[in-house]
Structure formats: C-alpha cells, structure tokens
Length: 241
Ligand code: GLP
Image (cartoon, rainbow, N blue to C red; front, side, top):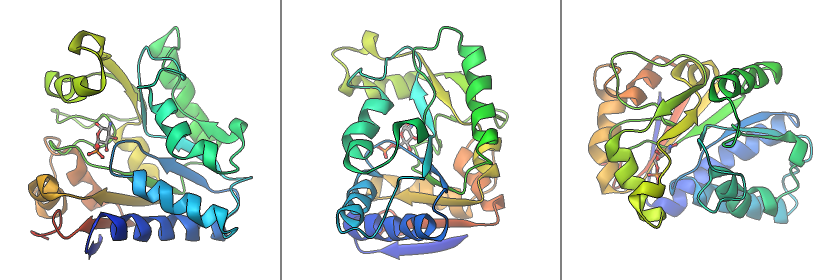
C-alpha cells in the first residue's frame, strides 16, 4: 500500500484527481471505477477543472460505478446516478453510452447483478477504482459480515446505514432497504485502487483498514492484499497512520 497523508480535503482531492488524470492520459479508453459520497466530490471538482482547461478528454473513457440504491430511478434526487450527473457526468464530455451503473429500477435484482457483473467483465475489467470508506469499514455497500462478498450483489442495508442515510430523505421509511454493490472480488480485480478518507471521524477506521488484521469485519482491510493500492488521507484522517 502506498500511503499519502496531505494537509486537507482540497489537497487530498487534487492528489486523487491527478492520479485519475494520469490514467486518462495514459489510456484514452480506460475504465474508471467511480464512487459516490461526500469524499469524492472534491476529486470530481478537480477533474472538471482539468477538463475545462482542456488537459483531459473523456470522450472515449468508460465509467462504472461502485453502487446504487435498489428501487430508485436514475432521476430520483437521492439516486447515485443523479449524484454522479450533478457532480461529474454533466460537466465533462463523457458519452452517455460509456457511463455504466447498476440500474436501480431493474425489475429482477438477481438478473441485474448478473448483468452488471458481466458488463464490467466485457469492458475488460476496471483500470482504476476510486473508493471511499464507511465508518464501519465498508467499501461500496459491502458491510461487515462473516464472509467477503464476491461479485456484484444486491445487499440488505444494515439499520445503521439506513439511519445514516435517512438525513437525505424525508423520513426513514423512504430510505431504500437494499442496494446494488460491486462485491469484494469485483473491487479486488481492479488493476489499481485509490482509497480516500478525510476528517477525524475516519481516523480509527482508516488505521484499522491499513494496519489492522485482514478481516471480513472491516471490509476495507482486504485492500492490504491488493498489489496496487494508494491511500490518500488528509491530516485528520491520517493522524494514526
Ligand atoms: C456509502 C457508500 C460508499 C461510501 C461511503 C462513505 O455507504 N456506499 O461507497 O464510500 O458511504 O461515504 P462518505 O464519503 O460520504 O463518507
């Protein structure tokens, strides 16, 4: 693991964006694995700036997202697709046909997990996957469990995750109970991983993920086994590294 601890959120975001930019320049048809949450917003902002300065061209880049709520349409303001449109997709020249995410409104969730898994394979796998980390060590929606999930799955959200997300919905009952996520195997198959964390509340969990035992109880700890991982944190999240 390569560890980079920088001053603040802005610097973390720019360092991450530079790594993604290098990938885009190195391979114009790269498959980028993208993430949602508050952590990657600054990275998207930097990438948009690079694009506006004409340093980057996304025309032939392909994207796959880590996760999506089950049951929400692409236009639902809380769907991850909507988030991606707002924070990244609509600001750069990605082709809609090159943007891939699990389809929240798919009729058959089982079939949707198979479709999305096969789609990632058909693109030749992920060149660079960006990841945030949940307070309990989850990556994507891979929550602490007794086993590591394999490929794309549709998981039941834990009560704590539902409660954490209820702030974005009118009431807790509106929070989807299930979500699609790339499995641990899907994430581990990416050629390169970029794990980002900022803020003091992530301090302990990022330390456990990087230095703690590899355990299904801290899903991010599995990243220690990946041969090409860069962890970038701000000073607050990286204080124990
Ligand atoms: C969610 C997402 C994850 C994300 C995590 C951290 O549960 N499914 O993909 O990494 O939250 O979110 P944040 O970046 O807002 O702390």
